[in-house]
Image 1 (tube, helix red, strand yellow):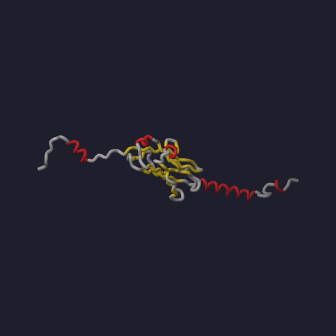
Image 2 (cartoon, one colour; image 1 turned 90 degrees about the horizontal axis):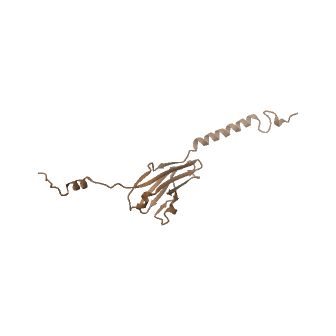
Image 3 (tube, one colour; image 1 turned 45 degrees about the vertical axis):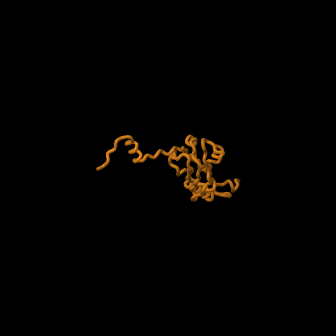
Length: 165
C-alpha cells in the first residue's frame, strides 16, 4: 500500500499550497525585475567638456542606481585611479553625495587645469549589482573669445579711416 505522502494532492504541501507558493514566488520575481534597472549616468551627456587652462575646474558626474546601498561611483584617468595618476593631489575626487533615493553625484576637482590634462581620458563609472555604465570625458580648451570690436580694430589697423560727418 502506498504511503499517504506519495499520493497526489496529499502530503506536507499538497497541490493547492504548492500552487500558491509558486504563484507568490513568480509575483515577487516579476515585481523585482520591474523595479530594478541598470545604473545610468545622467550628466554629463557630452563626451567633451570645454575647460579654461590654468583655472580650477569641477566636473560632476550625476548618476542613478536602483540599489541605494550597493553601488559605487568613481572616476578614472587613462584607466588609472585618480590618486595614482595625480599623486601630487592637484586632481582629486570629492566624496559621493546621495541626492535622492536613486540619484548620486561624484565630482572630479582640478585645482589647476594644465596642458597635459587635455590629453587624458577621464571616465565616470557607476556600478551596482544590476550592471555598470561608463561615460568617457575629455577636456578641451575653451575656444578663444573674439569680439566684434577686436575684429574691426584689426581690419582697420594701418588703414586710413573716414570719420562720419
